[in-house]
Image (cartoon, rainbow, N blue to C red; front, side):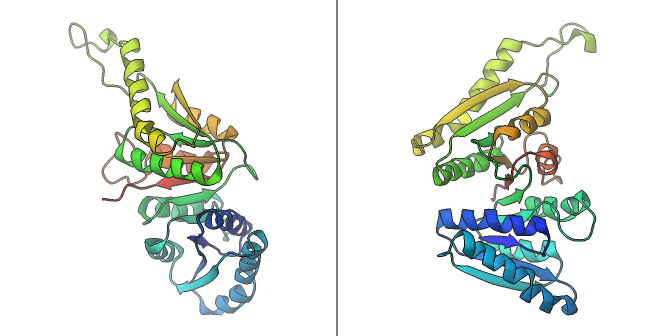
Length: 274
């Protein structure tokens, strides 16, 4: 397991979460720092990296902690390190004063291109509640569901599997001449279809993880708004990297990006690897 550290308060907070995740898995925690200027390296090694390592040991004294320092830009280094990790943990913003711009340039790209699930530490401090799974019926969503169930089993937490649907995202038949005003929507049929999608998305995993209490939540409305609202009562939100309807070149869907920017709890993005 890896955690990206640059000395910022956000990255040090990520160390706390990463130490807990590594402890739950019985995994080694590698503290990763990328540098572009050699002059900045010595203060970082003896300052923030040492502090990060001490924080990890304070939280879990028996944890195996290692440091990795590599030359290069943050995204390239973390993506390379993620090849051999079960999870990458990062803070939502780092040094440089760019605020959410840094999230857009580094964290979103890591979530889209990393070789393991990426957990972004954000939202309220010490969040409590269930693990929230965003269900969309896509292949990426299936990988996210597997991660969410495993995470619930590790944490001893219940799971809320949530699927949000609406009529404007559905292909709808026309009745009569090709007139947009003649759109016919069978709401009962659509609701049944989406209910079936939600049930099917977790059916096999519920059997594999009988110890995980599962709540199925079907909601009609705006997807991003509904998930962001639900994140206020969750300890972790898990989503796939790309859902249905995305452009081929968009490896991270618009909903996943919105969750990374605005969720009120940590967010883990899970990619489906071929």
